[in-house]
Length: 259
Image (cartoon, rainbow, N blue to C red):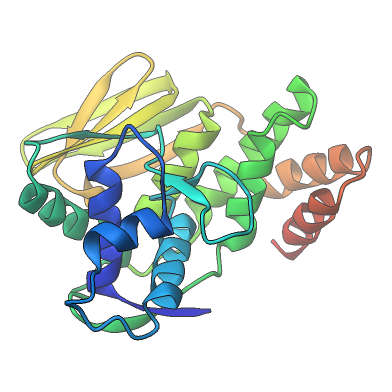
């Protein structure tokens, strides 16, 4: 569990968006954004916690796993930014994106980073690493996708931004229904490609189409071509994992058993 300020998290995401084509370290960020003019007490620890928060929310990806202060981070490839190249615009966008996660006004507040979905995030990252065979990989992706859309969240929308960002990684075939204020759409057997944030709107891109959404509440239903009950998918995945041996595999099995 971590404690970090909203403003610092906004600054890190703003820096990531501004440098969206390049990776950066915590030191790179600190040297540009935080100087001796600021109150830098415990700033290294706070920056580490802020990066950890953004990793847990799927808004940063780790470029390497060296356990040092010089780990490299980058905006995920599944997130596209289409705004004016302006720091003020980037900062407002960062605030909007983070508030889509929390679903409440947290600006200039201090709060704790929830890590209750850390196991499923680790499972998604493991599955997309192609450690499993292609067939087994696909089965696990279906199971994790179904778990993601079944997770309760604290925001007003049925699906959280965290869920969408993890579904983007998995790229499972799905059916989706979207209802905006003035329009309604349905798409069948599509795969997520990326999510694009413009100045004031969000666009979901699939392999066959794209939809603009007013907000996350516009997504009214997601389901999958696989019609098995979730418990059956979980059992199939557990049977598959029994044939593999790996420390991460054991964690995924524990996670699935708890589900």
